Length: 410
Image (cartoon, rainbow, N blue to C red; front, side, top):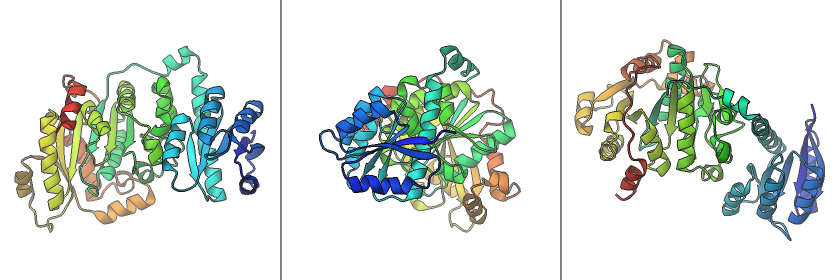
């Protein structure tokens, strides 16, 4: 196998030497050239065509952002990793928008550098292979099927166990229904689904949207990681800068494609009323609103139900009480009265089982199938009406922009 060819662009010679030393023992990488400023970086990249460029953001004559944009346009087969110091977040965002695939903050270790290079190279290779596919092969990889169901987990408060439930439900659906299931992590700045599934992330939804002109099933599938349960995961971004590149229209396009190619699309979201979340909620067949037996959670759930009702989402909402304990001091009947809503499912408080599963990176519906919490999630598949891929009634489409605008005018 040919080594990953690397170019280092930095105006400080000692820094270039330090980076070469960090990569010296990496057998699968080779530093083939260097550049001391942005203009030299562009010229050298055109001549040497490296797989990866490590680009410092502050350089004379032409800065890293300008060089990144020029190289990305001329050499789409070359992936650029921005190298920066702390406190340059705005520059990093601009660089990602210019075409950079990842960034590293100085100082970094040899392992961090090598791992980032491998991740970016692997993701970029998948993209390049896909874009070179003839149109007929792309069409063949996009089968037509009955539209799948989108089940979105939402909460307006952190700590409710929403991600744990979403992950275990997705795995359970794969096991129980034998349908095609994808878990989409749209908690864009704090997504942990990959951790719960013990998946090594190499490409994310943030990488995907940088190819927004060619978003279709083949490309999405190249960024989706298979889990041993049969579920696939489309991971959340690994940096805030990458997350900021994702727009509602990107998510809408991704969900339309997934709905045509999967039986179940399970989505984990951030606990906020963002425009992206509202767009996801509109696209959802079911919204699983997760709460716990704590007064702040009850209060915020009550508010959430009112907002969702105002947006005409109420028929899609299913309320799930997580971490239920008879010792919490709030009876379920009183809880339902407090939030003015009925519970669709109750998941018991079994923190020992949940914690063990998280630390092992193996969902409890697989590792501890007889536990109370696993049995409750399996029961939730039935109570939410998800036992078979067919037959869920679809609501008529709602005027998307009107409803989103309505919320943001509150």
